[in-house]
Image (cartoon, rainbow, N blue to C red; front, side, top):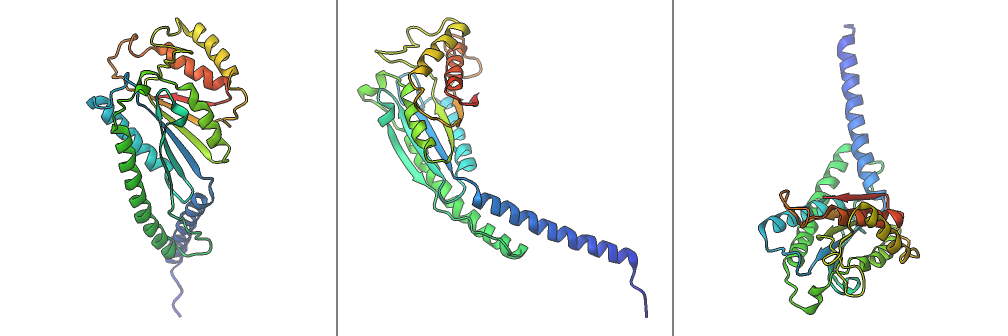
Length: 260
């Protein structure tokens, strides 16, 4: 009897292990996504006179941001996507609320072929949902606010909204599409009186955070997506204002605040 080729046997066995490993990785990745906590995305879009989404630079930046956020955060049944308008009455400014319905099927014990088939079906379904969410988000982004509410910018009133989302035990991700210029008649008015320096910004942030100490934010990820071009001046894109917000959220226990 002819003896089996040792080299061929080793290569065949190695290939088999590789196929099994790939199947395990696909299965593990699919299971991890199916079993992970849902994501609660909050988008706050500035609808005051200071932010004009009709300008090409702002429109492109914010459309790209929304597309990217939806791609990253809207992945499986239970993921939530909400948009609020920033204006005089921000806490009542919700204009869109959608929940993902695409189920990520549990693939435990399935072979690689079945897992691939399930993943293909999922990809088609989630793509349709994302396209719908993106279309609705763009409609809200482009809507004009000609009401009297566009005269004030009450960003601080978004904090209770974040706390409400945090109470759902979801992973909360917050995005401000705004210049972050708080402007309220009976409160902070950064249009008339921005913080003079970082020291003053930090002092104001500490004072204002104290007013919201009873709201549990549970450390969401917060991103400030500013509408300014790279050539904008300090007067237009004032770094002490964004420093104020970073310190405010820090004082409220938020660990991740980024400026984009």
